[in-house]
Amino acid sequence: MDPQGPNGGDGTSHRLSMPEPPPGIGTGFLTDYWQSQRSLPVMQGPEVLLYYLQQGMRTVLALPTSSVITVLTIAVSLFLLAGFLLVLQNVDRLLSEAGNTLYVTAYIKDTAEPEVVTQFVQQLENNPRVREVEYISKERALDLFREDLGPRSGFLEGLDQSNPLPASVDIVLQPEELDVEKIDGVLEGIRAQPVVEELVYGSEWVDRMQRVIKIFRAFGMTSLLVALGIIVFLISNTIKLVIYARRDEIGIMQLVGASATFVRIPFVLGGLMQGLAGSALGLLLLKGGFTILNYEIRNSTIVGVALPDLVFLNVGAIILLTLVGLIVGAVGSLFALRKFMNV
Amino acid sequence: MSTATAPQASSREIITLYHVDKLYPPNQYALRDIDVRINRGEFIFVAGASGAGKSTLLKLLFAEERASRGQVLVGGRNLVAISRQQKAALRRNIGVIFQDYKLLETRTVLENVAFALEVIGVKKRERFQLAFKMLSAVGLKERIHALPPTLSGGEQQRVAIARALINRPQVILADEPTGNLDPDMTIAVFNLLLEANRCGATVIVASHNLALIEEINKRTLVLDRGRLIGDFEHPKG
Image 1 (cartoon, rainbow over the protein chains, first blue to last red):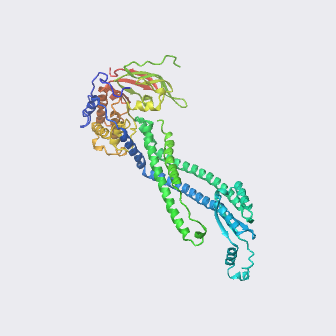
Image 2 (cartoon, helix red, strand yellow):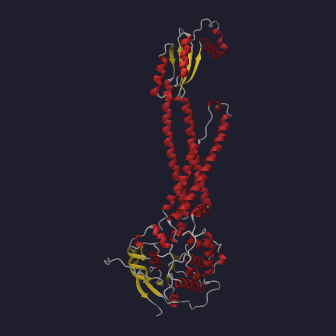
Image 3 (tube, each protein chain N blue to C red):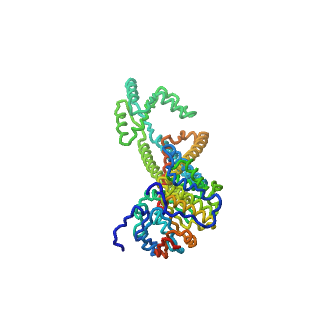
């Protein structure tokens, strides 16, 4: 079809011969407009973008109550998801810290020459697999023992001359050396030194902690994916209800000649806006809650001493969670629209 | 079953219905073996009692419904096999006046009329100016900021008419366009449709108002229970 109508009609000029129509109706504008054949100016580039943004905002504001419900649903969902991630991240950190610290004590032979011992300690300090080294001399070992015994240390009187405690080296290994496969090799290397009398460590503890961490991470990842699935379902159903309420409008737009893209873009942009607002609100609530909780923990005499500082989500996780909100908002709108796009 | 070859629309023809059936499940024929050719610039009434198939016939012409059999050609395009994109393009060249108005309830009267220009990307100032003039032409310039639910049936009908005409469409389909109007307003609306027809638009009006059909005395298709039982050039003679 041509964009504009042809001229002429069916050749018969007809005007109803009944009474005159009410004043002000049929002013002759129609004929002038129709026959002018002038093309109408259309929106270009940035105007189109601005138009769609305005329409996106309009879809959000058209049903304010529904939009608020959608934003709150996204906010609560993201709050729970991010909160879950935050707990996982901090528990993982605590477990890793506990599981990544292996204290090894190498007892030194009484017969060892001081220069050889010094050389052994220097070797350990230069060893890239070792994080910390502390030499405890025989005298220091006795002092520490006295400190531990406190007022009951009297029976140690006179032991200064015949100190039975051995000198030792306390060693902390680098966390990456704590793999079950690697650890034995590292320890064997230390044990093989001639100055070493005995090596004491808790490798079973490390082994067990490493396994706990692996299980915890697998559980955490699975639960996170399940939570994400539930949240996507929840949000998309909320959006579906909102779009269902506007199905007539979507149908009318198509009947008047709106293309599928023309109908979809404002709803998708509206979904993005709601997703962004919901994510921001959810994460802000979480940050507020986290700050209060961390403050309370720091000021608690019991828990505060036992627990290291809790850490909030890093920038990457925040961006990822915001993207989840945005994508769920936009894709949820797109899927919900699908059903009403065939008018 | 027809074994004839596909219809060849002449350059004068804008609408061709070729042995068209419309069957609603399970076994309800709304239209049966409709064979009609309509030339550019014609003014046509589709008459018949309620349930005769008038609305269904109009719905086939702007692809709201799809024919169960036969072919529907509008502007040379076969609507039986039309894509979503082509359907939107077709509708931008057809002004439809719906029996139930189909106005966007959350938009003002002015925005509703301008919407037909909005979907083709016309600039805001231009579309609102034209919508205002069109609403003035249907006597509604005082109500431009009202929302459709606050209007009377007759006023909503006129908004729908203004929206259908604002695009200068090649084809205007009107389903009982004066059903809710008083006699004076009915005349005004038909004068607008006749004016659009004189400007070149092909106008098809579904109506059961026989007095009006006789008065205007244009080609009239008569439907009865889905069948075309009459095609009168001038019903009054």
